[in-house]
Image (tube, rainbow, N blue to C red; front, side):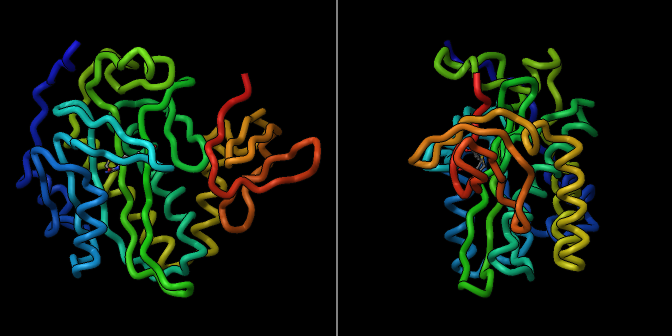
Length: 269
Ligand code: BTN
């Protein structure tokens, strides 16, 4: 069945005004349809696009997720946004920024829709057991210097249903609340929160990472004590045991403590 399109247009002038105190206000680019906001923004970053450039779209025809997955991006349904940052942090610390982006989305969803989302390491936001937001952070760096990074965020907002193969995994803000939350308000709250997080990391990294860790431990059921299945090519099971000093997830297995570097973490049934 075709996705029902809910009228929820963006007002660029109002967006600019709401974001006036951030570097995003002068660099907002809306696309009615695009292949992928992340793909285009990574290309434009190479070509010198300014820090704070934001691409957002009503529809993506080739939306990308982590690990070469696709991201369903039907028109009028979700918030699809990519943000270009050139943070003065080491490449090894970029994971903290990506984790902070998850906290920024959580904060935005709380402000706008009064929902308390769970955060599944590293970057999924869940309501109950189902995912409604994913984050794809892509990096262009030398070993010691970040040239630029693009944080790409997809939030399921207005979807009323998902294809059968996704319906046990995916949800939307509308499915969870029965209401249509405005994408514009989510975008403003999200960009303001992300700006604060990026600023904190650039000005006082140790303090910012402590704060991210504390907030994750408070708001995510996945950081400690969760029985999980990990798929990193090799699969294993264990219990989550906090984050290491770089932000990677520890999992205690029968064979010892392991660090999840890349893989998908799923709850053990
Ligand atoms: C994931 O959970 O796998 C990450 C999904 C990220 C999707 C967003 S939508 C905006 C941006 N453009 C893309 O092509 N991907 C990200």
